[in-house]
Length: 145
Length: 186
Image (tube, rainbow over all chains, first blue to last red; front, top):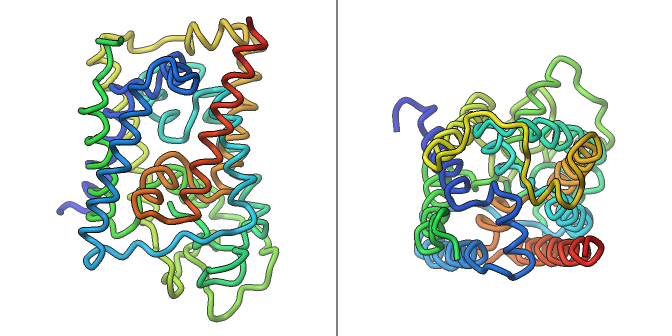
């Protein structure tokens, strides 16, 4: 696709639009999902994953995205993310969509994310793969994104 | 229950479409926390931090050295370059802006969410919670190596065991904390 910036602009725009119109940016909606009061968001996520399993399996010879490695930071990191997500409704994509929506206080959660990510980057030795990985120490290979 | 937001059968396939479109266009898995991290490294380009571990010659790092974008090591996938990352994040914000307008929401508001303020209060207290929650999200997603999009969509979609574990943990913990908050607030 030319120009090259469209390669990230198109999926980015669709992602921002979809999470916003689905209501992932709405803290009350997120809580309805996490308290099982409304399964709409949970169903949307589950449907997405099921479709992706089928599509990625079909594309496995054309699209090699590497392996996700078990590393020491995996579970503690996911734990911390879960706590923060339930407190604020902020997952990284959602906060950026909220900024686009003009939700002022999202600036504060965004700053928090930057500070936290910076801190984790300094500790990146903690993300060394425990086993199964192609790499020995640290690095973005331990990261799926 | 909710006619205001898109139904799951529309939003779910769209999320899947984005998570497939992104790697087809960039050859890297979709993941917002990773894109954010790559952008943060850009911001610190001027003063590279000392590396805590000696860089193994065989593993030059997947763009992990500040200011350097080396070729990916074997088994690693390089992300899009920094400009493309910036465009990605700006495009998410643009999508949010259009989505807010589509939903008839005010273009700018100082209210995060009535539900949030019911639980945590509205003044400084609410902002402190937002900031500390944000720190946990930023720290956790980087330490874990993925977020809802990276582990949850890209990783689970490829049936990667590590991503399935991470997703189960962050979803489970978020559910537990939500019920805890509800119990404390009742």
